[in-house]
Image 1 (spheres, rainbow, N blue to C red):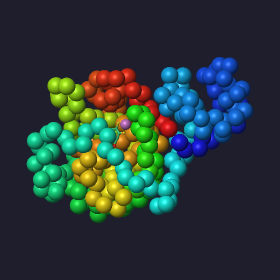
Image 2: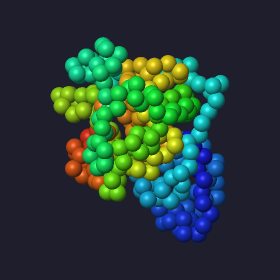
Image 3: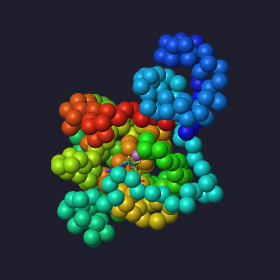
Image 4: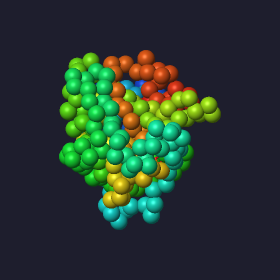
Length: 262
Ligand SMILES: Nc1nc2c(c(=O)[nH]1)N[C@H]1C(S)=C(S)[C@@H](COP(=O)(O)O)O[C@H]1N2
Ligand SMILES: [Mo]
C-alpha cells in the first residue's frame, strides 16, 4: 500500500473522528503503524466504513503510488480473471498481432477518434514498477510501459461536462456471457501521471493473458479497476446510464466499491 499522508489540519481530523467514531484517536495516534496492519488495509480498501469523500480527504489525490526497483520485481506476474477473451472479433484481431485493432475514443470529447497500437506506441511513454493488489488476496510487483492516459485524452479534448472515463473491454463475463467487462475512473485518476494504457509488461509485449493489446494501469486503485482488453473509451458526465449504473462489472454485479483506492 502507498504510505498514507494524514494531513494535520483540524477539519480533516474532525472528519476522520466522525467517520471512525471511537477509533479516531487510535487512528490518528498511530497511523503509520496501522497502515501496515492487514485489518487497516482492508478497512481502507474494502471501505464499509470509508466513504469516497473520506478517502479523498486523507489521501491527497495528487499523491503517487509507491514505485519499486528492478530488484523488487516478482518472479512472475500471474493472470487473473479473463486470460483469453471468448470473443470471435477479439480472437481475429489477436491472430493478426492486433495490426487492425484500434482504440475507439468517444462520448463527451471534441474530437472523437481511433488510435492504432502503432499510434499509441509513438506517443510519449511512461515506465513504472508498481505493486498490483487483487482483492482475491494476492499482490505482485511488475514493470509496466505505456502511454499516459492524459496524452490520449489531450488528443481528443474532453468537454467540460466529461467527469468519467469508461473502459469497454473485449471479454464477455458471467454465465451467459452477455456482459462485457467494463470499468470507469474519474478525471483525477484519468489525468494522474501514473495512469497509463500499458502495452508492455516486464519489457515484453503485453501478453493476451494480461490484457493485450492495451490494459489500464491506475496505480492507486485495486486490481479490478485495471481494465484489460480495452476496446473503447467513452467519456461521460455520469455513470448512471452506463450498464448497471455502478461504474463497473464487479460493482454492478457483486457490490464491489467503485472507488477502490489503496
Ligand atoms: N477485461 C478485464 N479486465 C480485468 C479483469 C478481467 O477479468 N477482464 N480482471 C481484473 C482483476 S480482478 C485483476 S486482479 C486484474 C488482473 O490482471 P492480470 O490478469 O494482468 O493479473 O485485471 C483486472 N482487469
Ligand atoms: Mo482482482
